[in-house]
Length: 365
Image 1: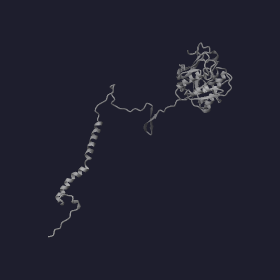
Image 2: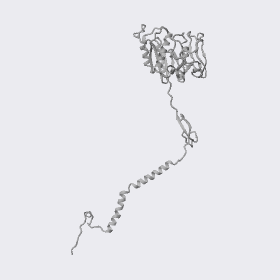
Image 3: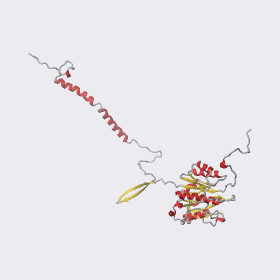
Image 4: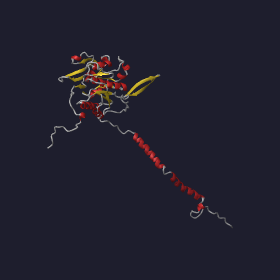
């Protein structure tokens, strides 16, 4: 009897014995292969679930309070409050029956510009005076503008001093023909006033002669002036044997009288030294804002007697004492000194530079 033999597929040639598996063997094979398939799909699942469980446990432990932290003083801080900054203004506003709180932060107010006007001229003590004023202005909080005015021409020595001061400055020249010491200071200050008016510089103008002594508190007080401020000045009498106090008597910031010791000056309207007052620069180029009674430019006069330039100038700026502010309040402090210590007609080397050795020299043995 002829027998029919089926050939095995190539899949089964590698099996031992070459025989096809029975159905029972197939089920056994599936049972042995199922753990192997699970081992290929499942190794990442168990670590993932373990990580998730530990993460949740750690999170819950971290959120659980275990104790109370007391400060060094033993005070109770059981409540935590978030307070607004001190520079926040809170205002309750109601609109259509709904109220809400509006908060405005205080803006930083910029400091006023202090415009210091200094007339100067070539003399023996000029370098000392200018350097002393410059060292004071360097300590003043900015912004500060130092306007230095010379007569006829700008000297090289003055320019060198100004460049080395570290202070913002403008070096001006007065072209007017100045025949006397009195006229020289008047015209130089007027040159600075014309410059301020032309460029509309906004700040507080102060006439600071180079031979005076100034305190830092003076320049801090200048920024508090609104229109016109004045204060007493300590002066050394021309005889240099006594001190004179000249300036306002104040009740708070209100000017109620004047200090003066010179009988010849009692006819003046305002008893103020040139370095004893300051004013808002907008008076020069915006007179309508201050309702000034004069329409002509505000300038110092060279047609009045010496010692009356201050009062005639102030009369163009204010009507009376009600427009003035005492600086500081009560005018109880001396903020600058006028000493009259200039040495006249003293020979000195040009630019304070020694071109050759001195004649009297002690040789080194």
